[in-house]
Image (cartoon, rainbow, N blue to C red; front, top):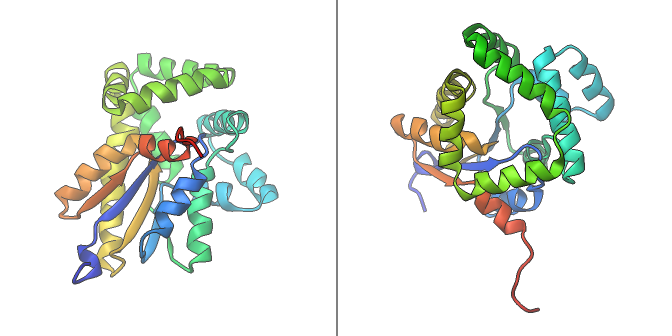
Amino acid sequence: MYARTTEAPVLLLGTAHVVDLAGPIRSTLADRPLDGIAVELDAERAQALLAPEGARRGARAGTPLLARLWGRIQRRLGAELGSGAGQEMRVAAEFARERRLPLFLIDDPIRATLASLLTALPVRERVTLLVGAVLGLFVPARTVRSEMDHYADDPIAYTAALREASPTLARVLLDERNEHMADRLASVRARGYGRLAAVVGDAHVAGLSEALRRRGVPVEAIGFAALRAATAPSSSPS
């Protein structure tokens, strides 16, 4: 094994916020000795997502409009796809509670992120974002499944297309947050929690891995495609 826990790699699990990956997330976490679990949430989003349902509705009421739109889209698609929005974060939090592990919130505050995004976006990208958020309220679940298939086939190409279509969006929502989350994970490890698992959206996995390695932190990454494949029914005869 490792002479010191701080030599262990950070385990990054790449998920999709509306796809049911509860089983493979749980089994992957259970397979490893861990000192703590990190999730791609800030305190406000954690309260809205991890609190009891009644408290969740109250917490959502005060969030910014764009965040509420995105949350509504995720909740609808999660229900239609059979998972529930943010289920992967709840599963990670529940696992940490069951194993009496600390849960670390490593994302930037949602309000600061959205303020930075809206300030930085050129008019064209701002209009594209708003139109996309509105259209997302009506997009069929089958379209999302198809897009997930395309993403799983080649996440690097898919992310590159996003960067080309909206470079500012990619910089603020992916690149800057990756750097900040890497700083927080490195800080947690420096405090003695070396054997960490971090559950993040799959679009963050490549950039966050690179950011951690630049900080001298080893990484083991298991992406969305591998986790989703673990949920597929076996084709072998019983």
